[in-house]
Length: 337
Ligand SMILES: O=C(O)CCC(=O)C(=O)O
Ligand SMILES: [Fe+2]
Image: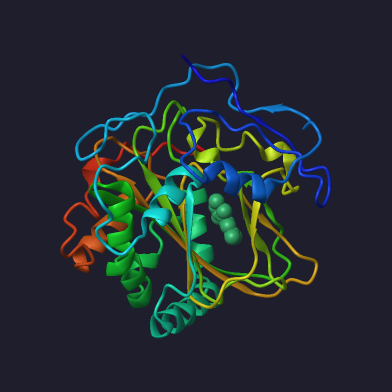
């Protein structure tokens, strides 16, 4: 009963609307077909690209209550408890992302930006990268993101954690955070997803990335591009890297968002950063969170240190699992890239 492999195809130019065939794992809900058709348009037969190869496909199962036990990863039996509309919930389940324009309080945004400047200009970001690339030589970084007060506040921002709790319908653990002031000439980032699993076998447990665009997004800066529904496929992170950052049929381009906007993505959603010729600085902070119940591969060699600092600073108040080490496997150098 494995669904057919998904086929993705590059869009054949503006408005041509060649569309990828997404896996028919769960029947679209009412209105979804129409919404997707509006987004994609009709069109020529796509050049087909097999995603995920011929390997076995594992139906997505909920591991523990209060899940519905149905096949779809995010069919909830519970009403949303914290202000997400039913449309937002079904949108996230079907499309794998949720846009929260102007979600973050301006004061928090200003403080995170100031910290990001210090992080970048003070060489702290470079030090943290060195500690990932050569852990033995570089040792622990002098500072990690969650130790900066506003970044710590952002990681544990109560409205954000409540939304994650609603979307995952379970307890969750912090996975990692990055902070950057992206330079105007920063290249794009090719199509990829960020779901941590080695090897990629299933989507039984949820992982979420929160992408914070502190200055928002506008056509002068690089765009975030997502491929709705692709989180329901099981594929390698780099399965679509051959397309670079090229337009793909069915993609949604996010290029206009107000200050302090957050895009919440299922980590298995394929996405890309599409650079612009007329780039400008772009403040980008992301943090990810994983549903508990399985062991997640860490991405930084000093992951235990980060979790310990989160606990020391009391960022897990009210969220006892947020920095618990037991939800991780050991770090393996170079794995999962
Ligand atoms: O820069 C962006 O908007 C997205 C970057 C991204 O996808 C990543 O760092 O994994
Ligand atoms: Fe990414």
